[in-house]
Amino acid sequence: MADTQKVYRPWPAEPPTYQHANSEDIQKVTHNKEWNYSLFDCCSPASLCLTSCCLPCLAFGKTQARVQDPKLEGYSSVNGDCMIFTFLSFGYAQWIYQCIKRGEMRQKYGIEGSCCGDCCVTFCCSCCALVQEEKEAELRTRPDLAGYQMAPQMEFSQK
Image (cartoon, rainbow, N blue to C red):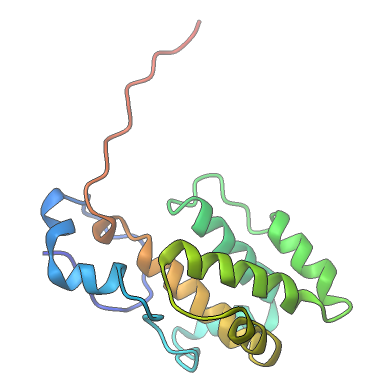
């Protein structure tokens, strides 16, 4: 049985199996219409909280990279989203970009909410929202919760 604890953690060592996808506990996590983590669940883990408060562009960039590629292959801590976030933060306009990306994340994972709610959260509690978004993306993209995934195809080298 897959570990369905809602704890921010690195990728599990075991590969996913088809049985994992059929568990009711897993369905409750991956198809939840609400955020699995509260907005005020932002102090744990402390490292993510610290990164979100002191270097929010790095936390934002990592979350956006995780949404695009859950395995974070080729991930760079300073990426395009991080640079845009940093540039916009000079005029305290980064919350607008974060609001847009938060809405896209809600739509992708089927989380209920509104644009108005996203605006309020990202404007008033930007750091807490960054932690919530990163933990949510990590939880919903875990290989053991995503179910069966086809093995990579064999590749032939071109010499």
